[in-house]
Length: 209
Image (cartoon, rainbow, N blue to C red; front, side, top):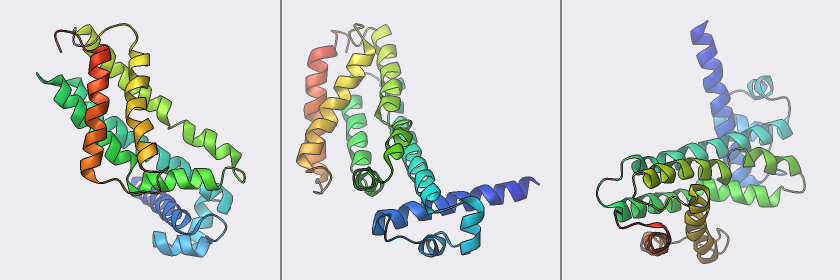
């Protein structure tokens, strides 16, 4: 029974990943269930066994992609749990990884699909928001609160600090990437990360940082 359940979960995951790849490549209107079945390596009836129609498949694929993106970004924050002696260097490393993830192929495709299909699927924005920036900010705020308790950051308001840290990263990134249409070189991402951390440290660091 466990093997059967595991196989069903694996097929569902393959279908969702295949669907997202096809939707990202072709757009919702041009994608067909056979394309998705081929991408996932399953039979077309198997897709319908897991998802009732293409619209349901789109919603679930977007939700899964957003959750994967959130999990990766939360993992990128882990070094802040034990930043060592050089907090600035750790923040720059975390900032650089967050920027890399924000500009990877899946993240850019997710944003493009949100923009292009917003009128057709207004509910998908809410679905994706459940795994969106506010969830990441909550995790970041928790990390910053712990640093504040250790005396390494000001303890005024970790939620505001988290919002400002992400704004310092994403604001310049969106402008430089022209809303995700321009690839940003790794060196430029490091410059954005360094500038963001410099400003953040001036606002939030203590003498113990």
